Amino acid sequence: MTFSEVFSVMEGASISLPVMEITGLITIVSLCLVFRYNRIGLVTAYLFAYRWGWLFVSSQYQTARIPYIWFGGAVAALTVFSMIRDTSLGE
Image (cartoon, rainbow, N blue to C red; front, side, top):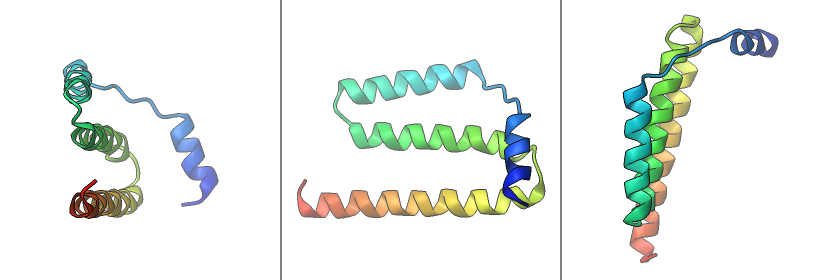
């Protein structure tokens, strides 16, 4: 899949997001910010964004799913590693 194909798919794509999920995201992230749980808020936002991206990718070509899963897993692993590292340093 070339860059122009990816761009044309994204240009013509439409996605609808469930209102309850958006409301849930805003509520959870707002509570995390109010109570100063910044890391939990960031992870929550990542999971919601990853799920919404999956809604888009799952309706596209099969070849787009594997890189999406690998990239999402890599970002999740780096996030967990960074949080463990920061916690062990006492920050």
